[in-house]
Image (cartoon, rainbow, N blue to C red; front, top):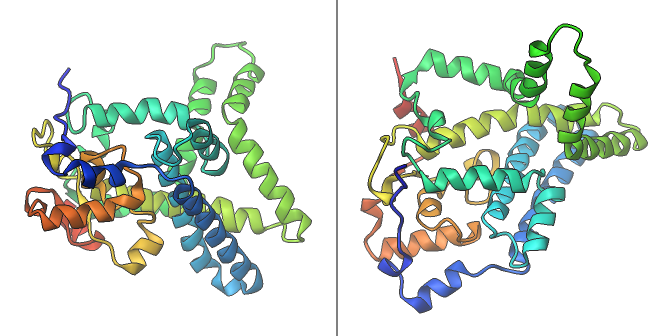
Length: 307
């Protein structure tokens, strides 16, 4: 197997520079998790008070749901908190769950980044695509079709493949166990909204953002990170792309520094909040021209589509 080339921090930073960049924080990761939930809470309150703002709330909440997934990603690298038990507990119960299985999968992506064995290569391989193809994908995202397929593909596949006479309940029971964190989490939301007298709140202000806007911005993030980067790329400074994001993009598409993806692949165990600082320091050292990057999400989408 072709392991991707790695970056040695000593090639770019003095020890006194690198130490603070790689250090975990006892409070910064937890503060970002709290921030995500506070934004979700504020957007929910806004939509409940003024239902006309529900479309905006869906975008805000969906983006923070992605933000929680990004913080779970940091936890998969052991970067959310210096205490491994706290790191994984917060990821499991406050960021979406599944951190151990995700870690096992995701570290393979880093080990074989843009090489033939990269499990995420399928996400970038189809590009460029036509604008019509991208449009169809966006429609599937915004109508919940992508979410439904991803969420229930495993159980529906098993149900279709079961032999005549094979009982259904064991298959459903296995799926309930596998989805237990999701079921517990969403059950609590249903109870909370119902108790507050807003029976529709869970559907409109949690499930719909997760099934629509979250799916779209996750696709945009995946495109920006690796699309049009060559398979078997030998240069570790070009295994991933950093996308410059303005204030609106950071609020609705790329929360918690996820746009600094080239820096993340170069130094994968650095906490996300230090990635902008790394970029500034690399810029001062004249390294940025060697790195993969683009000027925004709209230019990136134009680059990956053909007529």
